[in-house]
Length: 505
Image 1 (cartoon, rainbow, N blue to C red):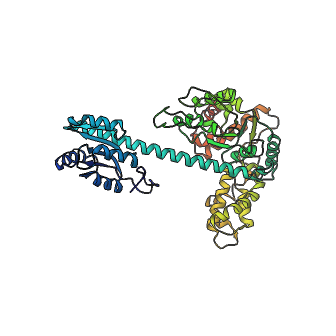
Image 2: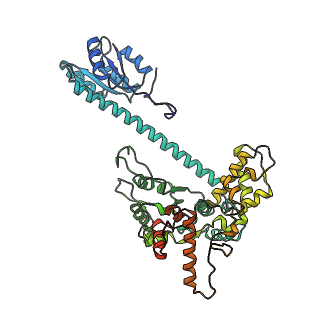
Image 3: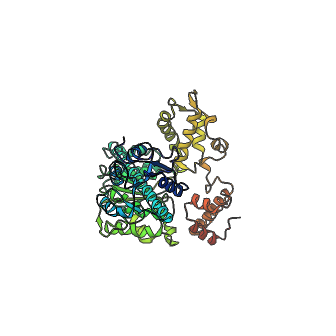
């Protein structure tokens, strides 16, 4: 016989959870029939004629609510419900009494054996209302327990990740091993990171999507003095505004619906360490003010709380957006921008360091081959040349995906060849070399600039041509064009107006 509360299946996503039962216990068949008739349209009903039979039903079914008569042969209803409270505490307990049983009902309530009671004769509407309330309360209890279990599991994952990462970063140089590349652009970036390892100042990492901004943030954390403290990452674009504040600052019990307990936020989870705010340009304006307050004063107030908490957390932020343009457009707070941009770092696009592509490709082959279940492979000369000549608008992330794609197709071949590369690379690689990006002298669609043209005029002409080319390649799509150029939509609209350009050409 069970000795603990009712429980849901561990994997509720694997199969639909059946509606919980209502158990009716009474030794008078007519009363049982009436109760069942009034409830069975809404709930599956079980019945029992005495306490012993009720125990059997409880042992074999998921029961949300039990309705028991007080006066039954043998064990009374109050005694049965007191037993249910001990062995099935989530099941809501209703005692059915006659007017003459009022003293017994009060005694049962005082003993904690029941949560509700109904008088005989009952009103059908009252019965349905009381049972509905009991079943809904049962559902909320289980839902809250499930949410708490998932939160604990998530915190365990986060803790294990931090332990794993700390074990990989015991000296200042180890974190830089994740930044693969020997090009001048990467060498300069690594030199800056090494110089910044002792720093505690805020850092703003800019660069296109897929260029490894989080790797830079991790290098700064795990190579610095906070390496033994948590590194916590939050993608500001991944959460709706309604829960972002609670996620960052935590909340107190009762702050909002389903806030059944106090919960710390990611800032407090990062105490002593680093909070990485990825895609900070997507942070809602209401949150920008709250993050600014933390950067200025180092204190937080949980949602629904009244007391402040002092924290020591370093902030590293990253974005692919043009925050200066967003500041000009009033979509990003100027004061927050300068608080974040104490130390600016820029991750170079892959097309700016094409000489690193072969080295990166070998790195991804070595890392991904065991995951896919193939022996390490080389990359033949034709495939390596095609990779090096591709523009990679998706940057390092796109290259990694291309290598994973190839390894899934390479089979028993000794090396990755052209035929294993994604079709996008094999169709465009020969005619889309990195050395012929828009804006360079070899691009036949751009006008040559007179050598005596003033610098400001030349820059404007080049910018206009660059925007026109991006618009054309994105078929006039403003969102894609802005993303390619590293601008906000409003920033792009401003430049289109400045140069008299239109998306449709």
